[in-house]
Image (cartoon, chains in turn brown, purple):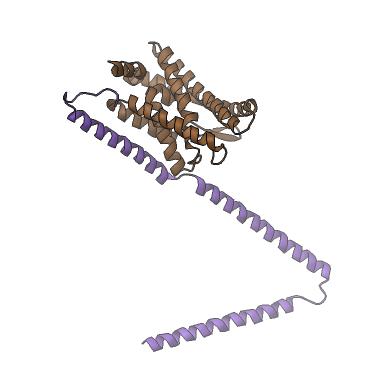
Length: 209
Length: 116
């Protein structure tokens, strides 16, 4: 799920760059220096995840993990995804450099929303964290497909048509991503629960204190 | 020495030229000899068609191979992947370094400045 060069109108391209630069700056300010190693690891995982092709029926789908990144990083997820997409577009030619702003918005905004969702509903028990993590992972991809439809709609496409196609094409990704996220978060909850601590709440307190 | 070499080279060139022309002459001769006058044009046509189809098959195979190669070229290799991971770790390492220096220099000692 990447937008290529020349698909979007120029105003949307520039707007996407501006919006994602602002969000990335906000995200960088919210990132605490102790969290940098964690952000780096999740960024690297996000960068590499798109290369893992899961065979599915006649085709194969690849992971996107915006939801997982959001659940693990909270506000820093936008920065992580922006950097990951920048390197992907430069090294792998995934998506174009001019569409980078729009692509970052497409993956980053769902990641932030999934972060809020996960931190709000994760509860205490391990099982619940795992289930909510899986839901966040599935939600991330589905939201990304919706944002994709929204962005393409600005280029003159029919929003509901594109949304339907994008969602239908990503049903397997949503399912697989939900499973992967549930497994990852369940594993982290058992092995290192500190990684799942609410970055949103803590950071907000630290900023306002 | 060099003159000898040049002569040798010239000799070799001459030999190669001879060989090529001999091949041409013999091939032409054999082709002429192999084509009996009694072979009908229809047989010739089928022969040609057979050769054509086999050549076309070969070409298609080679075209498929080229397409597969091109697809492989588009795929990121291990170098790109490792390079990207290196970039990410390096950038975050630099950020952590800068953040730690800033924290150490801040007036109230080594404390997290909270947020940036």
